[in-house]
Amino acid sequence: MLEVENLVAAYGKVRVLHGLSLKVEKGTCVALIGSNGAGKTTTLRAISGMIQPESGRISLGGENIAGLPSHRITTRGLAHSPEGRRVFPTLSVADNLLLGAYPRLTGKRPKGDMQADYDRMYDLFPRLSERRNQLAGTLSGGEQQMLAMARALMLRPEVLLLDEPSMGLAPKLVEEVFHTVARLKQASITMLLVEQFAAAALEVADYGYVLENGKLATSGPAAVLRNDPAVKAAYLGGA
Ligand code: ATP
Image (cartoon, rainbow, N blue to C red; front, side, top):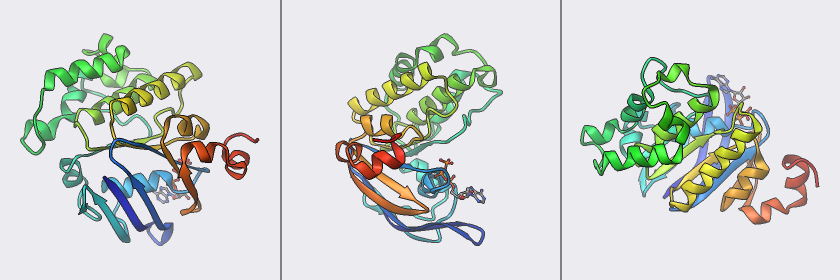
């Protein structure tokens, strides 16, 4: 479904990704883990067109999307829930969701049943349901994070990129976020998940990639990585 080959990306002259390759099969959840600054967020940004890769191939459903502007990548069915609660603060929760579905409203994506999807989002995120008319900027950090995820899902994406959905959340909410990711997986949503909570990410994911300094350190089925002594020692809080 999504395949990245030899991706090279930089900020100015500083190269951050040095030829990264990874694959996300349809209906699976793939975790991208690694220490701070390894290049995880940059990988998602390059895939969704927020930054232009220097080189490499990114194929979505068989078509090369590398270098396309982000709105064209969105209309091909890739949704990006970015790090750091990027919601439209002066719009209501409901209007934020509506904007997530914008390509469906303009005929650039299949329309489908909008009402059913609203209902699904409110079922998946009951806190948003209670606050559908509230301005997004007045939501708590955790609620904004949920809204960013729900808005991305309103595209009905072929592939969902999730960047640190647990960032800055209290432990109880972190648990809720992972529970939600597990539900998305049950619903066969194809996902590439970047997470600082590597153990929890590998618990929910099918497959994992470990990034170190912009290169792949190792990869494998999540169950194998969870038991890999080197991965455990470096990323999962010891043996
Ligand atoms: P974290 O877990 O800390 O979020 P990450 O693996 O997601 O880390 P990135 O955010 O991709 O890492 O950053 C990779 C490198 O690129 C870091 O050294 C970072 O300082 C640098 N970097 C990120 N964004 C920019 C930017 N806009 N301009 C310049 N350098 C950047």
